[in-house]
Amino acid sequence: MSRKRVFALVVCLGALLIFAAILPAQAGKAVPLSPIEQLGKALYYDKNLSLNGNQSCATCHDPAVGFTGPDSQVNAHGAVYPGSDPGKFGNRKPPSAAYAGDSPLLRYDSGAMAWIGGMFWDGRAAGDELGDPLAEQAMGPFLNPLEMGLTSPAELCSKVEAGAYTGLFEQVWGTGSVNCTDGADTVYDQIGLAIAAYERSAEVNPYTSKFDLFWDKAKTKRLDVTKITASNYTRYRSLGLTDTELYGLAVFNDPNQANCASCHSLKPGSKGYPLFTDYSYDNLGIPKNPENPFYSNLDYNPAGSNWIDTGLGGYLESAQPESAAQEMGKMKVPTLRNVDKRPAANFVKAYGHNGYFKSLADIVRFYASRGMHGGMMGGGGGMGGGGMCGGMMFPAPEVNENLATLNMFRCRDQSYIVAFLKTLSDGYFQR
Image (cartoon, rainbow, N blue to C red; front, side, top):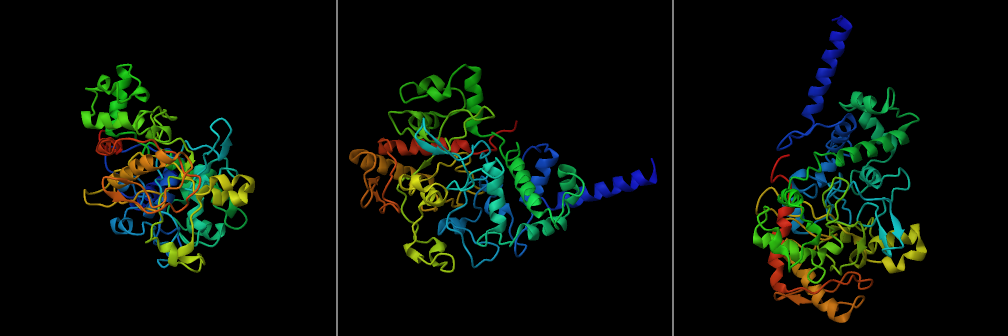
């Protein structure tokens, strides 16, 4: 072997060691990643790509909690995470960054009579620029002053240029691709596309939950899980779920029961498994979270505690004003995968776009209350002071218009639904 080749090999090995050192160890079986996925992973975990070198994508989207907020104390209160500047806060809790890659471009579906697709709670990463909402979402936090806080694509490019993975960047995008003089905008796009590739990888989306094993066993028995109901669920016994979990799934899916699957769909996605979302938008009537730190962020929120989160409708006011009024208060239906994944039993996770709910039991109770109260009043009626189920009252909705119609179901079935939702955490088995 020539000296030139030996030198190149040593340089490559050294780069790989540096690259490995900046990435966190992943639990379970190692998943092979393509070069663009490896690049996306390096970018995803690099805290240097922020104003103060203290925040990466994983700071708010951590795998230990299903790629969402990893701080139990933050989740227990305002649920909104500080940016690289710790005195600045956004306005919503971080959604999961996993199982998001099938979301289409934001569009109005005339058949469903609903807006579908896009990324962020309000759909503003529509996919119009890159043809990929997930990539556009990945780009957003870098230049958001309330998040990673960089000022321009050029500043972000210079930080990537100084990183340990520039060789990998050029392997993926071509020699000389890290061009911060007149190509920073292109580099910015490529960063988003690489992170999206990682977020679509099998490492982030392993489909290794207890439910996935049940789904596989049901397929071998030629049983269609999408058809499970409260009247036929016993047909699905002995496939890995307990009777409690199985009945919870049945109530979850049954159109005549909770019917959660009408939005958190059991329809298989691109990998053949349900993603538990139909990518649509709804106003559930969630109350304001009084501890949201955005209310006191007066430099960016002059309305203070009077600020109202209008969700998709707020975005459409600028993107498509004629459609905005009927979409006010609607938020994107999140995936339920890893909805209960947490590093410890006493770890607090927050639920809802603003983190108002602090347990699965709380948010399922809210659905039951809304189903009873909203169901009696019909689809668009206001909730007033809130419904009651299990002795718990809820405040009025933050946006008391365009409220979704939720099915009525028995309060006593809440625990079954919660038991089923706990089967959606990855890591139950290895593929």
